[in-house]
Image (cartoon, rainbow, N blue to C red; front, side, top):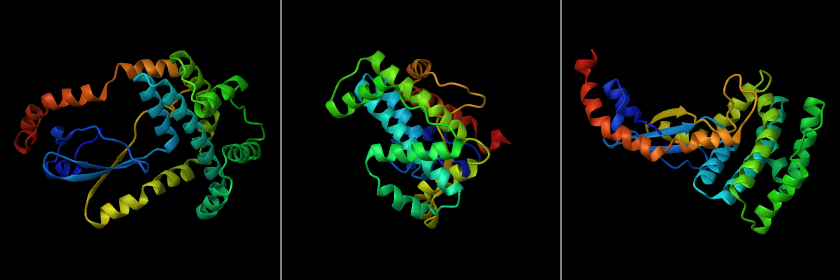
Length: 258
């Protein structure tokens, strides 16, 4: 959910009537129009694997268990790619050279192999992959159209999240954090540059996802996260805000604010 940055700049406080939910595009750059006709570019400052993990939970919550499994499987594969890119760029490889090399290994098995070797070189230990039964289950869902149960979907996502955790922790360390941040920023660079060229306001932020680690977090619990998600409905939140927005904005006039 976002608010209008131009209203914020003009009034000195948020236009709560402009709060809205929107669909996240592939580059994480969303064009938001408020009730005053202003447009803001809101950029999500997080990598795609985090967003895909959130889409997985949304799908499971809504009863689309197969889509939940597929999205979390995609999140894990996206994390593998992101990891390799962060490692190589940290070690001085040019981003364009990475993209050319990665595109040459466009099969998931080869990409996983590249990730596994990069992980071994960087950490000195072999990567602990998904259990064999979960790999078999994922392949049946993705390639054979198997429709999983709720419990099966949660179990797979938990296994994938457990595999993801040591990778995410490593990328949060001091050695890699700058490269990670630079890569995320580059994803939406084209949209930001275009917005700046026409004077559009830009805001940035992130959302909490299963693969977004809170400070001090030592594990990822998918069942708990899903339960929290069930208690938070974005449409209801937006509707509740809208109900009180007019009264709140009338109170937050420049006169009363001063």
